Image (cartoon, rainbow over all chains, first blue to last red; front, side, top):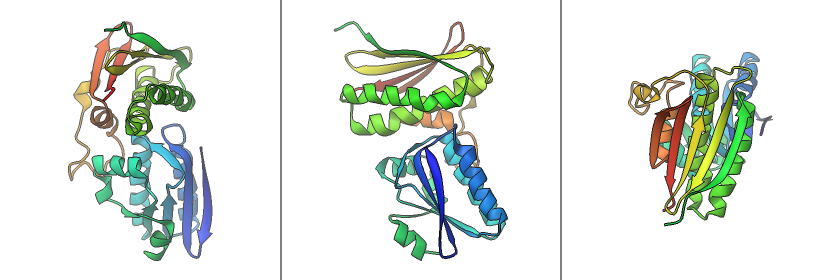
Length: 110
Length: 140
């Protein structure tokens, strides 16, 4: 499990590889907060290589969403597989995040 | 009716870094038993991760020397996981909140038990020598 960060124009793209769970959520949070502190405002988290997410992983996404918004930025999500889509629907987090089917659509949506 | 068999019996230290490996062993068993794919890729991994992190962080309070045992039983109609910690009694079921209400959806915590109930066919808390969370996943 790992996170890789890249830039697409002025958008910070985070790829989540493997699981986003209690054992690694803090790493994701810190990486995004570091970018936010550098002045970045637009964030896209791509889940195309993600297996599953637990409640603490979902909690980190909520936390990041709030912190980014407080700084006048935006967080968007892309490429939820069917399992992850179900998870977001169960928890109603699909109503909280702007979610795109593809990375390209998400990038265009900013 | 065949006697239930033990499919998995492992003990891990109270450290969340061990969770993913145990969950993978459980998911493999789920796939070998040919349970529906969704149950093996979503329901079991998420619910078992919740039970394990609860046992490590809350039950055992990440104490050195305390362990969490995971035991899986396979019966004719279900896959049953017992997650056993060594901590003091606590009423996990009393802490069940609905994280989907407008007031709660922005909360950063409080989805663990909700997810266990939503993804498992049965969730039970049994007090033994520690806390036992029993997760039951029906085969169909």
